[in-house]
Length: 375
Image (tube, rainbow, N blue to C red; front, side, top):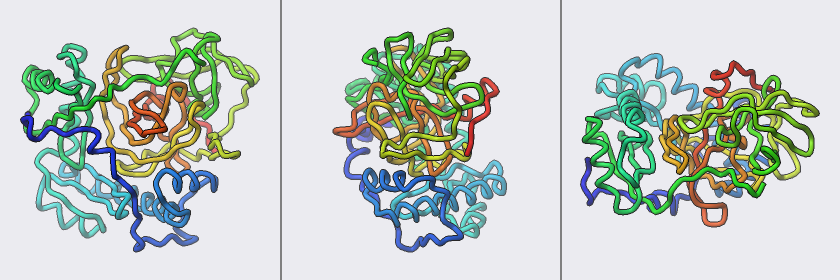
Protein backbone atom coordinates (compact mmCIF):
# COMPACT_ATOMS: atom_id res chain seq x y z
CA UNK A 1 0.00 0.00 0.00
CA UNK A 2 1.30 3.44 -0.85
CA UNK A 3 1.63 5.54 2.29
CA UNK A 4 0.03 8.91 2.96
CA UNK A 5 2.46 11.09 0.89
CA UNK A 6 1.18 9.32 -2.21
CA UNK A 7 -2.54 9.47 -1.46
CA UNK A 8 -4.41 11.24 -4.22
CA UNK A 9 -7.49 13.43 -3.91
CA UNK A 10 -10.33 13.17 -6.37
CA UNK A 11 -10.55 16.93 -6.74
CA UNK A 12 -7.04 17.02 -8.13
CA UNK A 13 -8.03 14.50 -10.77
CA UNK A 14 -11.17 16.22 -11.95
CA UNK A 15 -10.26 19.91 -12.08
CA UNK A 16 -8.43 21.71 -14.85
CA UNK A 17 -8.71 18.95 -17.45
CA UNK A 18 -9.53 20.99 -20.57
CA UNK A 19 -9.37 19.04 -23.82
CA UNK A 20 -7.45 20.03 -26.93
CA UNK A 21 -7.50 17.78 -29.98
CA UNK A 22 -4.33 17.47 -32.01
CA UNK A 23 -4.51 19.24 -35.35
CA UNK A 24 -2.53 16.35 -36.81
CA UNK A 25 -5.72 14.28 -37.05
CA UNK A 26 -7.83 15.32 -40.01
CA UNK A 27 -11.23 13.77 -40.72
CA UNK A 28 -12.21 13.11 -44.30
CA UNK A 29 -15.40 11.94 -45.94
CA UNK A 30 -13.93 8.44 -46.09
CA UNK A 31 -12.88 8.28 -42.41
CA UNK A 32 -15.60 10.38 -40.75
CA UNK A 33 -17.26 8.55 -37.84
CA UNK A 34 -20.91 7.59 -37.83
CA UNK A 35 -22.39 10.48 -35.83
CA UNK A 36 -26.15 10.47 -35.90
CA UNK A 37 -26.97 14.07 -35.03
CA UNK A 38 -25.31 17.50 -35.15
CA UNK A 39 -26.68 17.96 -31.63
CA UNK A 40 -24.32 15.26 -30.39
CA UNK A 41 -21.35 17.21 -31.75
CA UNK A 42 -22.80 20.38 -30.23
CA UNK A 43 -22.94 18.72 -26.81
CA UNK A 44 -19.33 17.60 -27.15
CA UNK A 45 -18.40 21.16 -28.08
CA UNK A 46 -20.20 22.47 -25.01
CA UNK A 47 -18.91 19.93 -22.47
CA UNK A 48 -15.46 19.11 -23.88
CA UNK A 49 -14.52 22.58 -25.11
CA UNK A 50 -14.22 21.46 -28.74
CA UNK A 51 -15.29 22.93 -32.03
CA UNK A 52 -17.53 20.82 -34.26
CA UNK A 53 -14.55 20.00 -36.48
CA UNK A 54 -12.44 19.01 -33.47
CA UNK A 55 -15.22 16.79 -32.11
CA UNK A 56 -15.48 15.04 -35.48
CA UNK A 57 -11.70 14.59 -35.59
CA UNK A 58 -11.76 13.16 -32.08
CA UNK A 59 -14.42 10.60 -32.95
CA UNK A 60 -12.49 9.61 -36.07
CA UNK A 61 -9.30 9.13 -34.05
CA UNK A 62 -11.20 7.06 -31.48
CA UNK A 63 -12.53 4.74 -34.19
CA UNK A 64 -9.02 4.25 -35.56
CA UNK A 65 -7.62 3.65 -32.08
CA UNK A 66 -10.31 1.07 -31.35
CA UNK A 67 -9.32 -0.88 -34.45
CA UNK A 68 -5.63 -0.69 -33.52
CA UNK A 69 -6.36 -1.87 -29.98
CA UNK A 70 -8.27 -4.88 -31.30
CA UNK A 71 -5.40 -5.81 -33.61
CA UNK A 72 -2.79 -5.52 -30.85
CA UNK A 73 -4.91 -7.43 -28.33
CA UNK A 74 -4.82 -10.40 -30.68
CA UNK A 75 -1.21 -9.95 -31.79
CA UNK A 76 0.33 -9.50 -28.31
CA UNK A 77 -1.60 -12.19 -26.46
CA UNK A 78 -0.60 -12.40 -22.80
CA UNK A 79 1.85 -9.50 -23.23
CA UNK A 80 -1.04 -7.07 -23.85
CA UNK A 81 -1.41 -4.93 -20.74
CA UNK A 82 -4.29 -2.63 -21.71
CA UNK A 83 -4.77 0.50 -23.80
CA UNK A 84 -5.58 4.14 -23.02
CA UNK A 85 -6.75 6.74 -25.53
CA UNK A 86 -5.75 10.36 -24.86
CA UNK A 87 -8.37 12.88 -25.97
CA UNK A 88 -5.84 15.71 -25.69
CA UNK A 89 -3.45 14.24 -28.26
CA UNK A 90 -5.61 11.60 -30.04
CA UNK A 91 -2.86 9.08 -29.26
CA UNK A 92 -3.33 5.47 -28.19
CA UNK A 93 -0.91 4.16 -25.57
CA UNK A 94 -0.68 0.38 -25.27
CA UNK A 95 0.83 -1.16 -22.16
CA UNK A 96 2.86 -4.35 -22.47
CA UNK A 97 4.21 -6.65 -19.78
CA UNK A 98 7.07 -7.86 -21.99
CA UNK A 99 9.61 -5.36 -23.34
CA UNK A 100 10.07 -7.44 -26.48
CA UNK A 101 6.51 -6.46 -27.52
CA UNK A 102 7.33 -2.74 -27.76
CA UNK A 103 8.33 -2.88 -31.42
CA UNK A 104 5.04 -4.58 -32.35
CA UNK A 105 3.07 -1.80 -30.69
CA UNK A 106 5.07 0.95 -32.37
CA UNK A 107 4.77 -0.73 -35.75
CA UNK A 108 0.98 -0.54 -35.36
CA UNK A 109 1.22 3.23 -34.83
CA UNK A 110 0.60 3.31 -31.08
CA UNK A 111 2.74 4.48 -28.19
CA UNK A 112 4.22 1.64 -26.13
CA UNK A 113 4.68 1.48 -22.37
CA UNK A 114 6.21 -1.38 -20.38
CA UNK A 115 4.34 -1.96 -17.10
CA UNK A 116 4.78 -4.20 -14.08
CA UNK A 117 1.23 -5.48 -13.78
CA UNK A 118 -1.03 -4.96 -16.80
CA UNK A 119 -4.79 -5.12 -17.25
CA UNK A 120 -5.23 -8.86 -16.66
CA UNK A 121 -3.39 -8.76 -13.33
CA UNK A 122 -5.25 -5.63 -12.23
CA UNK A 123 -8.58 -7.22 -13.15
CA UNK A 124 -7.65 -10.23 -11.02
CA UNK A 125 -7.01 -7.89 -8.07
CA UNK A 126 -10.41 -6.28 -8.60
CA UNK A 127 -12.00 -9.73 -8.64
CA UNK A 128 -10.29 -10.62 -5.35
CA UNK A 129 -11.45 -7.37 -3.77
CA UNK A 130 -14.96 -7.96 -5.14
CA UNK A 131 -15.06 -11.33 -3.37
CA UNK A 132 -14.35 -9.52 -0.10
CA UNK A 133 -17.36 -7.22 -0.31
CA UNK A 134 -18.99 -6.19 1.91
CA UNK A 135 -16.55 -7.48 4.54
CA UNK A 136 -14.22 -4.49 4.70
CA UNK A 137 -13.69 -1.40 6.79
CA UNK A 138 -16.00 1.56 7.01
CA UNK A 139 -15.29 4.43 4.65
CA UNK A 140 -14.28 2.38 1.59
CA UNK A 141 -16.23 3.72 -1.40
CA UNK A 142 -15.03 1.24 -4.02
CA UNK A 143 -12.18 0.45 -6.39
CA UNK A 144 -11.35 0.49 -10.10
CA UNK A 145 -8.59 -0.29 -12.58
CA UNK A 146 -6.47 2.73 -13.56
CA UNK A 147 -4.61 1.61 -16.68
CA UNK A 148 -2.71 4.89 -17.00
CA UNK A 149 -1.26 4.37 -13.51
CA UNK A 150 -0.97 0.57 -13.85
CA UNK A 151 -2.74 0.18 -10.52
CA UNK A 152 -6.02 -0.60 -8.82
CA UNK A 153 -7.31 2.54 -7.12
CA UNK A 154 -9.24 2.08 -3.88
CA UNK A 155 -11.39 5.14 -3.14
CA UNK A 156 -12.10 5.96 0.49
CA UNK A 157 -13.59 8.72 2.60
CA UNK A 158 -11.22 11.36 3.88
CA UNK A 159 -9.17 9.91 6.73
CA UNK A 160 -10.18 6.31 5.95
CA UNK A 161 -6.88 5.16 4.41
CA UNK A 162 -6.41 2.61 7.20
CA UNK A 163 -9.57 0.80 6.05
CA UNK A 164 -8.11 0.39 2.57
CA UNK A 165 -4.79 -0.83 3.97
CA UNK A 166 -6.64 -3.37 6.09
CA UNK A 167 -8.61 -4.53 3.05
CA UNK A 168 -5.40 -5.05 1.05
CA UNK A 169 -3.77 -6.95 3.91
CA UNK A 170 -6.82 -9.15 4.53
CA UNK A 171 -7.28 -10.10 0.88
CA UNK A 172 -3.58 -10.64 0.22
CA UNK A 173 -3.54 -8.67 -3.04
CA UNK A 174 -0.27 -7.18 -4.26
CA UNK A 175 0.07 -3.91 -2.32
CA UNK A 176 2.50 -2.53 -4.91
CA UNK A 177 -0.33 -2.60 -7.46
CA UNK A 178 -2.73 -0.59 -5.28
CA UNK A 179 -3.19 3.17 -4.89
CA UNK A 180 -5.43 4.77 -2.25
CA UNK A 181 -7.48 7.80 -3.24
CA UNK A 182 -9.24 9.89 -0.59
CA UNK A 183 -12.36 11.82 -1.53
CA UNK A 184 -15.11 13.73 0.24
CA UNK A 185 -17.56 12.54 -2.44
CA UNK A 186 -19.54 9.39 -1.65
CA UNK A 187 -21.25 7.71 -4.64
CA UNK A 188 -25.02 7.28 -4.50
CA UNK A 189 -27.59 6.09 -7.00
CA UNK A 190 -29.41 8.70 -9.06
CA UNK A 191 -32.96 7.35 -8.61
CA UNK A 192 -35.12 9.45 -6.30
CA UNK A 193 -38.74 9.53 -5.21
CA UNK A 194 -39.30 12.88 -6.90
CA UNK A 195 -40.18 11.16 -9.85
CA UNK A 196 -32.78 9.13 -22.62
CA UNK A 197 -36.86 9.73 -21.45
CA UNK A 198 -38.42 9.57 -18.07
CA UNK A 199 -40.47 6.72 -16.66
CA UNK A 200 -41.91 6.11 -13.21
CA UNK A 201 -41.73 3.00 -11.05
CA UNK A 202 -44.83 2.03 -9.03
CA UNK A 203 -46.16 5.57 -9.64
CA UNK A 204 -43.55 7.02 -7.26
CA UNK A 205 -39.84 7.16 -8.16
CA UNK A 206 -38.49 8.28 -11.53
CA UNK A 207 -35.67 6.93 -13.70
CA UNK A 208 -34.59 7.19 -17.33
CA UNK A 209 -34.87 4.71 -20.18
CA UNK A 210 -31.60 3.19 -21.33
CA UNK A 211 -31.93 1.52 -24.72
CA UNK A 212 -34.73 -0.18 -26.60
CA UNK A 213 -34.43 -3.97 -26.87
CA UNK A 214 -36.70 -6.64 -28.27
CA UNK A 215 -39.82 -6.52 -26.11
CA UNK A 216 -38.92 -3.51 -23.97
CA UNK A 217 -35.91 -1.54 -22.78
CA UNK A 218 -32.86 -1.85 -20.53
CA UNK A 219 -32.18 0.38 -17.56
CA UNK A 220 -30.50 0.37 -14.15
CA UNK A 221 -31.29 -2.47 -11.75
CA UNK A 222 -31.66 -0.15 -8.77
CA UNK A 223 -34.58 1.60 -10.47
CA UNK A 224 -37.01 -1.17 -9.61
CA UNK A 225 -37.38 -4.77 -8.42
CA UNK A 226 -38.80 -7.60 -10.53
CA UNK A 227 -42.56 -7.19 -10.84
CA UNK A 228 -42.58 -3.44 -10.30
CA UNK A 229 -45.00 -1.46 -12.44
CA UNK A 230 -43.45 0.96 -14.92
CA UNK A 231 -45.15 3.79 -16.78
CA UNK A 232 -44.50 6.91 -18.84
CA UNK A 233 -46.73 9.31 -20.72
CA UNK A 234 -46.47 6.91 -23.67
CA UNK A 235 -46.79 3.42 -22.26
CA UNK A 236 -46.66 0.89 -19.47
CA UNK A 237 -44.61 -2.16 -18.61
CA UNK A 238 -43.23 -4.41 -15.90
CA UNK A 239 -39.72 -4.90 -14.55
CA UNK A 240 -38.81 -8.36 -15.86
CA UNK A 241 -35.21 -8.49 -14.66
CA UNK A 242 -33.31 -6.63 -11.96
CA UNK A 243 -29.89 -7.16 -10.35
CA UNK A 244 -28.81 -4.71 -7.65
CA UNK A 245 -26.52 -4.58 -5.75
CA UNK A 246 -23.76 -6.80 -7.17
CA UNK A 247 -24.40 -5.38 -10.62
CA UNK A 248 -26.79 -2.61 -11.70
CA UNK A 249 -28.76 -4.30 -14.48
CA UNK A 250 -32.44 -4.03 -15.25
CA UNK A 251 -34.86 -4.54 -18.08
CA UNK A 252 -38.52 -3.69 -18.57
CA UNK A 253 -40.84 -5.90 -20.62
CA UNK A 254 -44.56 -6.65 -21.08
CA UNK A 255 -44.76 -3.19 -22.59
CA UNK A 256 -47.90 -1.68 -24.07
CA UNK A 257 -48.16 1.50 -26.15
CA UNK A 258 -44.36 1.68 -26.42
CA UNK A 259 -42.81 1.34 -29.85
CA UNK A 260 -39.24 0.10 -30.01
CA UNK A 261 -36.84 2.54 -31.73
CA UNK A 262 -33.04 2.85 -31.99
CA UNK A 263 -33.11 6.48 -30.80
CA UNK A 264 -31.64 8.30 -27.80
CA UNK A 265 -32.97 11.73 -26.81
CA UNK A 266 -30.26 14.40 -27.17
CA UNK A 267 -32.43 17.00 -25.39
CA UNK A 268 -31.73 19.49 -28.17
CA UNK A 269 -34.83 18.76 -30.18
CA UNK A 270 -33.42 15.67 -31.87
CA UNK A 271 -32.15 12.12 -31.37
CA UNK A 272 -29.03 9.99 -31.75
CA UNK A 273 -29.46 6.76 -33.70
CA UNK A 274 -27.83 3.73 -32.06
CA UNK A 275 -26.19 1.43 -34.60
CA UNK A 276 -24.46 -1.06 -32.29
CA UNK A 277 -22.84 -1.63 -28.91
CA UNK A 278 -19.10 -1.82 -29.59
CA UNK A 279 -17.29 -0.91 -26.36
CA UNK A 280 -15.34 2.35 -26.52
CA UNK A 281 -11.73 2.58 -25.29
CA UNK A 282 -10.64 3.96 -21.95
CA UNK A 283 -10.12 7.69 -22.44
CA UNK A 284 -12.65 7.98 -25.26
CA UNK A 285 -15.31 10.68 -25.32
CA UNK A 286 -18.80 9.68 -24.27
CA UNK A 287 -22.21 11.33 -23.92
CA UNK A 288 -25.11 10.65 -21.57
CA UNK A 289 -28.87 11.22 -21.82
CA UNK A 290 -31.06 11.53 -18.72
CA UNK A 291 -34.48 12.88 -17.82
CA UNK A 292 -33.22 15.27 -15.11
CA UNK A 293 -30.22 16.99 -16.67
CA UNK A 294 -30.56 16.09 -20.35
CA UNK A 295 -27.48 15.55 -22.52
CA UNK A 296 -23.93 15.83 -21.19
CA UNK A 297 -20.55 14.63 -22.42
CA UNK A 298 -17.09 13.84 -21.05
CA UNK A 299 -14.67 10.95 -21.23
CA UNK A 300 -14.24 7.40 -19.97
CA UNK A 301 -11.78 7.40 -17.06
CA UNK A 302 -11.59 3.68 -16.32
CA UNK A 303 -13.41 0.39 -16.62
CA UNK A 304 -14.10 -2.48 -14.24
CA UNK A 305 -14.80 -0.14 -11.33
CA UNK A 306 -16.33 -1.32 -8.06
CA UNK A 307 -18.50 1.13 -6.13
CA UNK A 308 -20.03 0.91 -2.68
CA UNK A 309 -23.43 2.60 -2.48
CA UNK A 310 -25.48 2.84 0.72
CA UNK A 311 -27.55 -0.07 -0.66
CA UNK A 312 -24.52 -2.31 -1.32
CA UNK A 313 -21.52 -2.90 -3.57
CA UNK A 314 -21.71 -2.94 -7.38
CA UNK A 315 -18.94 -4.34 -9.58
CA UNK A 316 -18.05 -4.05 -13.26
CA UNK A 317 -18.99 -0.38 -13.68
CA UNK A 318 -17.32 2.20 -15.92
CA UNK A 319 -16.12 5.46 -14.36
CA UNK A 320 -16.48 8.81 -16.17
CA UNK A 321 -16.11 12.53 -15.54
CA UNK A 322 -19.59 13.24 -16.90
CA UNK A 323 -22.08 14.88 -14.54
CA UNK A 324 -25.48 13.42 -13.59
CA UNK A 325 -28.18 13.92 -10.98
CA UNK A 326 -31.05 12.00 -9.36
CA UNK A 327 -33.58 10.84 -11.95
CA UNK A 328 -30.87 10.34 -14.60
CA UNK A 329 -30.43 6.73 -13.38
CA UNK A 330 -30.90 4.12 -16.07
CA UNK A 331 -30.32 6.62 -18.88
CA UNK A 332 -28.34 6.05 -22.06
CA UNK A 333 -24.59 6.37 -22.62
CA UNK A 334 -23.29 6.52 -26.20
CA UNK A 335 -19.92 7.01 -27.84
CA UNK A 336 -20.44 8.04 -31.44
CA UNK A 337 -23.40 5.87 -32.47
CA UNK A 338 -22.45 2.95 -30.22
CA UNK A 339 -24.49 2.15 -27.09
CA UNK A 340 -22.21 1.92 -24.05
CA UNK A 341 -24.30 1.56 -20.90
CA UNK A 342 -26.92 2.86 -18.48
CA UNK A 343 -26.40 5.37 -15.66
CA UNK A 344 -25.77 3.77 -12.27
CA UNK A 345 -24.72 6.49 -9.82
CA UNK A 346 -21.95 8.80 -8.73
CA UNK A 347 -21.22 12.03 -6.93
CA UNK A 348 -21.46 15.73 -7.69
CA UNK A 349 -23.96 17.44 -9.99
CA UNK A 350 -24.24 19.26 -13.32
CA UNK A 351 -23.62 22.68 -11.79
CA UNK A 352 -20.22 21.99 -10.25
CA UNK A 353 -19.29 18.75 -12.06
CA UNK A 354 -18.93 15.24 -10.76
CA UNK A 355 -18.03 11.60 -11.26
CA UNK A 356 -20.61 9.22 -12.71
CA UNK A 357 -20.51 5.44 -13.17
CA UNK A 358 -22.44 3.49 -15.76
CA UNK A 359 -23.33 -0.18 -16.05
CA UNK A 360 -22.04 -1.44 -19.42
CA UNK A 361 -24.88 -2.46 -21.72
CA UNK A 362 -23.45 -5.64 -23.26
CA UNK A 363 -23.49 -7.60 -19.98
CA UNK A 364 -27.17 -6.61 -19.57
CA UNK A 365 -27.98 -7.92 -23.03
CA UNK A 366 -26.10 -11.16 -22.31
CA UNK A 367 -27.68 -11.62 -18.87
CA UNK A 368 -31.20 -11.94 -20.30
CA UNK A 369 -30.53 -12.78 -23.94
CA UNK A 370 -31.84 -9.42 -25.17
CA UNK A 371 -31.39 -7.94 -28.63
CA UNK A 372 -30.50 -4.26 -28.89
CA UNK A 373 -32.70 -2.25 -31.25
CA UNK A 374 -30.41 -0.71 -33.88
CA UNK A 375 -30.79 1.81 -36.66
